[in-house]
Image 1 (cartoon, rainbow, N blue to C red):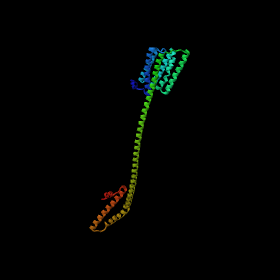
Image 2 (cartoon, rainbow, N blue to C red):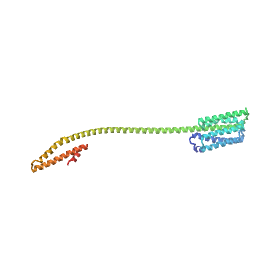
Image 3 (cartoon, rainbow, N blue to C red):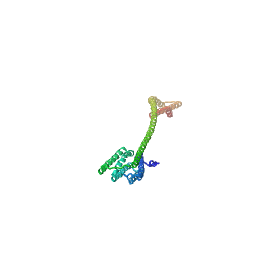
Length: 320
């Protein structure tokens, strides 16, 4: 029936349970004030009037409307306390014998404040209320040191009913705020448990990934070790091959070309000798083969100097 109080948005930055408790309080005070008007019309409380109770009913309804319009919660609580103090101050000035009734009801105010405000705010507002009580006590005492009051059982019974309803409202609202706090704590606990499970899962995933990365690194280190071994072996092979090529280059340049040059020199000398046609033909072939051999030896020397990767295919390509 009162779901509209919950469905209306809560002003940003305020505790939902306190705002809702304040709304329920304003609604209850409005209802109790209307009930007080009915009692006043029936039995006449004497110390209060219908106008007083009417204002006491209209103002909470107005504050409830402002709360539903998302007006700042703290300002509404302070306004409610100032309204209560102001209207009762006017009532005491007009009727000093209302003082004992006012003190009787004002004692309940801090109990309501604990459900609507933070501890420091409750303390400050309670101090203000105490100052008003002391000030009015001095004011009433200065005007009249004492006064008599007539207690009518029916009037006192009606006041007791209202007082009981107010204290019941306090008890219900307190239970509501406690339940709201407990519900919020349970939700937060469930959320923390969920986050804990998620964090544990993330930690397990990270641990598995770290293990996988460690295994990959181990394999890479092993592969690098084998690669280094292979590179070292290949380096030794290349060094041996280059050493052989160096030795061959030395043989080609010094040991082979020397005798070849001597053969070419002898061929040149034989060109001037008297020979038959058959001998000349043989000498021509010998001279041509010697020049071909000299050309190949020269090309091998150049190849060794310019291309370290000297192999059999290179030698075949050097043939005329």
